Amino acid sequence: MELKPTKGLVVKVNARREAIFGDESVNVQKVNIDNGAREGVMTGRALVGFCEVEMKKLDGHNHWYPIEDLAGEHGEKIVEEEIPIELDEGEGSEEES
Image (cartoon, rainbow, N blue to C red; front, side):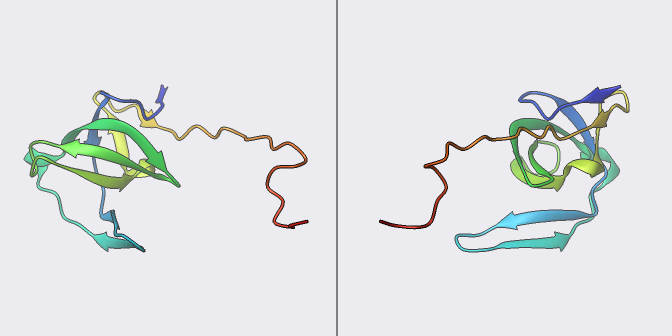
């Protein structure tokens, strides 16, 4: 069974890396998570293969982990949904008149 990253979804984190978003950049760094602190709750926010997870048992903060390193409570695979965006002909053009 597959689950989409949705708000309130309880997940088990098996991540070895985490994205740290700064004001002007993003860093990906290695992490080690203790077995007792691996459970978190998704906030529903996802971006380019990472999603935000509230880690109450770890430190109470939100962290960004790769979606591929997460599983549902019962081992379900978490998958990112791709939503195509259609632009009108006038939108998205960088040319100015």
